[in-house]
Image (cartoon, rainbow, N blue to C red; front, side, top):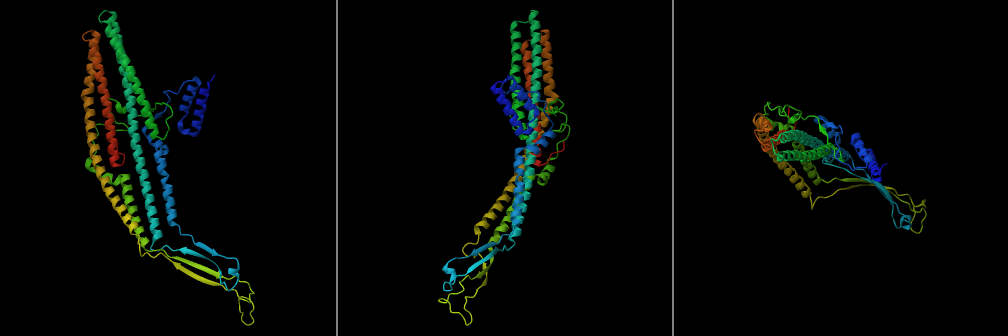
Amino acid sequence: MRTPAAKLLCTAAILFNLAVPSFGIAQENAIQMKAEEGADTETVYNLHRKFALSAAFNKADTDNKEILIATVNLPISEAQITIAKAIPNPTFSMLYGFGPAWAYVIAGNGQQFGWAEELQIAGKRTKKMNVARSNYIQQALQIQALRFDVHNRVRRAYAELAAAEAYEDLIESQRNVAQKLLDISKKRFEAGKAPGSEVLQAKLAVMQTDTQRTVAQGRLVQDTAALMLLLGETPRIQEIVDVEDNNLFKLSAEKSVMIPDLGQGAPVLQDLLPAAWRERNDLKAAVQQAYVNRRSLTLAKTQRIPDPTVGFQYYFSTYKPFQEQYFTPQPNARKVPFQPGYQLTVGEETPIFYQYQGQINQARATWIQQLKQNELLRTQIAGGMVTAYEELLVARQNIEKFQKELLPDSLKVVQLSRRGYELGATDLATAVLAQQNYQQTLSSYFDAVVAYQNAWADLEQAVGVPLKL
């Protein structure tokens, strides 16, 4: 029978998945299974969720919250174009009075109604449309720049998750080795060739790998949550997602979808900077922003030419027809005549005391500031490219050093020390120490591979386009 807490947990899981369908059936089943058992939500393994890097990119394009928010700016900018195209609506005015003031000629008040229309001159409407269209293009470039930045972060998070999986596999293999040393120490103890302290020491080495396994699993959960957040999901359970491309951390470091083969030469630095000037969307957006600001300055200058307002008024009278005491009629005319009239009005602001110097100076300063920011961005791009390129070369050299010398030598030391302990030529401490050194070397190798991948990601970010791997 379900407990009240279990029922509540089941209800919450169902409501959440109704609200967020993309959360996944596997998570719902896992939570419901734990609710059936009355247990708290814990780390969930084997959910059979596996992501390729290309699939992660596609999911980020459709579900990433930052991209979705930025995409909304396009309809806003499009609406601004519609606003800029709009012709001002005419203004209707009417004055209709009641009472003696409008009934007798002696008061002389007539009724009136009319329309007034503001005329935009000096090309203001066209200039407003130019500003709005330029701003729309700038927003589109910003969205492309954000999408590339999100892809870059997804690549990094994917590599971190792959490294966490490789590190967990390393801990498992090291635990198996520690267990073999424990079995050897037990056999030597039973044969009277080793003291009981070696068995305890070997057990301690196995237990140490258990704590490392816990840390490795925690890192997997954290890296999974970081990746899922970039993919637009709301992490709700302690989930571990598998990555499809994990060849990155094999000793061969063969070509993968994330980094090229080490044998492939690095791109020429001198060719990358011109490519960045052409391809970086954030630089294009910055240049477009300067173009928007320049058009805004042109629009601000037109404010010195005022827009006239042209109006038309129609006047008519509503006097009483017979009012002899106030009105001396003409011969043969005893009634007050109907008295209509027409009026044209023209009004405009007279810029005598203030000619919009503040708006013009502000627009000019904003434009100049953007130009200087663009120069700063170009300098930062060049500096970041040189730094990333150097990090790439250093990481390549480190990986080659690990593959050709450090890892093979460390593995030989481990095999010899373990064989020596099995034959009684060395003690257990020597074998355990060699095994720990090998584990540290492998962990450092993983860090070097991650650094190599991050260097590629930094270089791609500096250039602004994916590099051919």
